[in-house]
Amino acid sequence: MDITLFNTLGREKQIFKPITQGKAGVYTCGPTVYDYQHIGNFRTFMFEDFLKRVLMYNGYDVKHIMNITDVGHLVSDGDEGEDKMEKGSERTGKTVWEIAEYYTKVFMDDAKLLNILPPEKYTKATEYIKEQVDMIKCLEEKGFIYVTSDGVYFDTSKLSDYGKLARLDIEGLEEGSRIGFNEEKKNKTDFAVWKFSPKDGRRQMEWDSPWGKGFPGWHLECSAMSKATLGVTFDIHCGGIDHVPVHHTNEIAQSEACNGAESAHYWMHGAFLEEETGKMSKSKGEFLRVQTLIDKGYSPLDYRYMCLGTHYRKRLLFSWDVLDSAKTARVRLKNRIKALKENAANFTNITNDSNSVNKFKDKFLASINDDLNMPEALAVVWDTLKDESISPAAKLEMISEFDRVLGLDLEKAEAEIKQDVPAEVIALVNERIAAKKARDFKLADELRDKVKSLGFEIVDVKGGVKLKSIKN
Image (cartoon, rainbow, N blue to C red):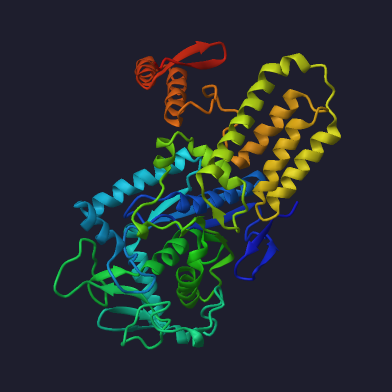
């Protein structure tokens, strides 16, 4: 069955046709590690995870690359203001290298809690400086750059189809509305590929180049790193919808100008998670983190379930009521599966209706292959559970198969889920289960004591554990 994906470049669903049969090269824009990632950022990372899982479910060998932006991302989408990393250093009192390491680790930990599969390779911008300098040299040789007092700029007028991804009305753009004002720029859409260090100071991250000491522009890193890891042309490039008008537009321009070939065949973008006040953003000062959800008694997988309930190209309005509904649904789903396991032995004499089994498998595949229609795929899961012509054992087998895409750990051994049990306690109980399985009994005892200190007693029973509240 064909996979159809909405290609932003053509503004339509298109059948996925890989460059190499059976393989898929995917590049996803990762975090800028100057601060924590909020749950809005993770909505994008989860949509990319759904894509990867769907490709794998269809038998593709996926080579997934995700960048870590640890230099060059200025506070504006243009080419003015402080580097976000330098600003983060100023805010925390730590070096840019220290905050990059810290926030990268937190991002990876949060991604793991949300069951996001790690990429085959994380590429850090600071580890690909040579490749970025080489790309600027390539652009220079082809006449696409010029030098100003503050950096090296890409001349967008030299590229006839500049702005094709965003379908920019270049004549209608006003200076300052999309990009910062700079009297030395030849065109208002020109962008920096290299920024010079300030003459009156020293940056924590700076490198020598043929044009002067400085650092690469934010857009350049993805072009250089995708080329280094996936080749000149690869299958799919993903990111948030906010990357379309500037970041990905400029990335396409410099990649195709240097390489003389199409960058990616498919460009996919996820819509925002929004609060009642608008798009969730770090610039507001306060934002919701994965840890915030845990502190309020939710499992990170409750949020994953919530994201599954809305198509990735539709905006998702966050509220605690919506998250409560997702939590309730996930709890019900887990408990239904737990009951299936307990009752499977009593229904061994059921002759499965093979037509029903195949019908649900086909419907699930059709849903996920239709531009990642995860809400419809979730509905198929619930319909599967309701069908009485299918035995518990067969249902469990199908749910296990479907969960390879959903990523909800529906059959994973964990404490009996009750809505009044804090997610922190559930997480500790699951850690203890893993510790016992690994025969690390010392750690298992420590975790039992920690759970007890939070007001719950772990009771080991056949096939798992139960929790008993010991709060006064």
